[in-house]
Image (cartoon, rainbow, N blue to C red; front, side, top):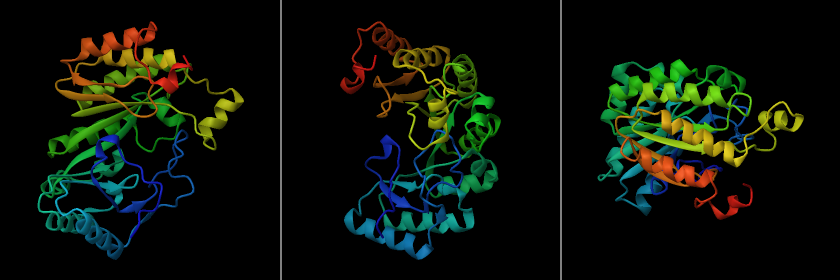
Length: 289
């Protein structure tokens, strides 16, 4: 069956087989997100999913990675999800990893045994949108999971053998709460110690509640220089023990990649150059500085 658009996946999953288990997002309340507006949430029927797997095998039987869509495939309970993972493992003999987005509460409600069962069937990577480590900012943007819930979920999944990729949204606190956004996000990330960490920059999407707040003057977004300063401040405060860092999303003004802590000084130097006007920013962004 064709994928019901839009197809949203992390940049790192560009070469993965995209298997749509759900359409839309099980929460779909975040004020900044317009990704799944107008796309009702539902769990696809097993027959649809099996047919999609069979089509995928036909086109690329040597596929090594699978990404489960849409917004939170782990809303599906293990008794329904494990047979799908088994089917994938049988269909793709060279399969090494299955990945998915996940909300904190859909990880937290699972037992350690259930999470370990997912890992055993090669669901080895979960992407969590922390967005901010500040609880008030998350409440203001109607994030479905709390900071503590996401920290605990990440720690729980990691203990079960599942790697965690955390996403942070620069600028989410606006000008008013930028300092709190930075400080509390540093604390949360240092607790989680994610295997992968990526930064995105807030883009106000027409039709979303946050866009309307900005139009009324209730939310003041950061300018490009302020976003770079937030990014620098967070990286400076991190004490990672072995994290792959990327800031290469289309929303970012500066493409960055490295390992923490090894490349921390290098990353800060690159950001400093960009802030001072000597860096290499994306051409389409330069005129906005």
